[in-house]
Image: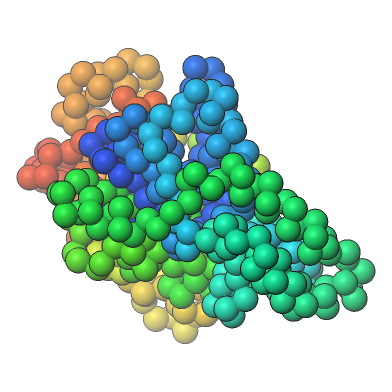
Length: 444
Ligand code: IMP
């Protein structure tokens, strides 16, 4: 189980890719084309938004699950790109329960952002919120509807009637006929992939196969537990993995929370540790912090342990995977937020304020930690060869501090974009392998 522990973009795609080597199935359980993952295969750039990236692995089936909202036309495009590159290797299964994002939803997304005046969410404009709203309002259309053209048209007509108010705002809606034609065309390509996906996964569980559930976005974008209303519209936390896949909520074997060694956020909303100075700019540059779906610059800031403690608890995390440790390499010192001072002066350690307005007013309390060396090619090679023992002491100390402060061991560390730039820390040595007394600096 892979869950984003922050505001999304933590590097889940890379860790999924790394772990899918041992998986028989990878399941996306929420979200839709608001997520994005760029793959470079034989020099060809492919951007996947709705197909799990495990599709590149021959023996690993990819499932776009029931909890997703899917744009059929974008899905056709992803399948076309994969087919052209000859890498639709594993099998792809699209849940017949996944909801359809229609052109009307995208239009509503844009219109609603305008309606919010000075407080837009900063959505990806992919129609995510309006589609999930139609789902809970019971107006939505699903993948299963694509196989019944007459019923599909009737449902589209009923849904269209709920949308015409937008036309009064000077926007022209696509006609029912045009949307039906678009869906019919998409359906011809998608039909072979659409099926009930829960039974496939139940049978896989019975056979003892490995299933990897891949979350999109992150804990603090969860519709209930994130920084509402600056969130996405689905459940990004562990609980959402069950309802969004149809896998019964047994305790999963392992829940890995992905966190960067710092924090980023795209879109609006409170961000206590945000850096608006040259350090933030340096992190953005060095980390290539640009949204993979919208190309927007990501806001950057220090690591926030209040968020990670909450994340660890709500997701029942068994470990953290810390990504992009190379990006902070070369900094003389780094800061970690160990708590907040709330607006009334109260100390906050593990439960961020519920109201975004209060979250915007908290003051982060920092601990300064020694920085670690630049990740030169030489250092990378040394870690690839020798493993965790070659991690610089200051970085080990930083990871130990994160483990200690969150009560959650760091088990995986990613120090570059390539598959080999990943190192596993041994379970018995969650603090990087050196006794805590030997770490330099800070309070570790
Ligand atoms: P929506 O999901 O397009 O409705 O956007 C709602 C909020 O979630 C906005 O702040 C987006 O920037 C953010 N968001 C949505 N998807 C992602 C993602 O994959 N990574 C990071 N932020 C995201």
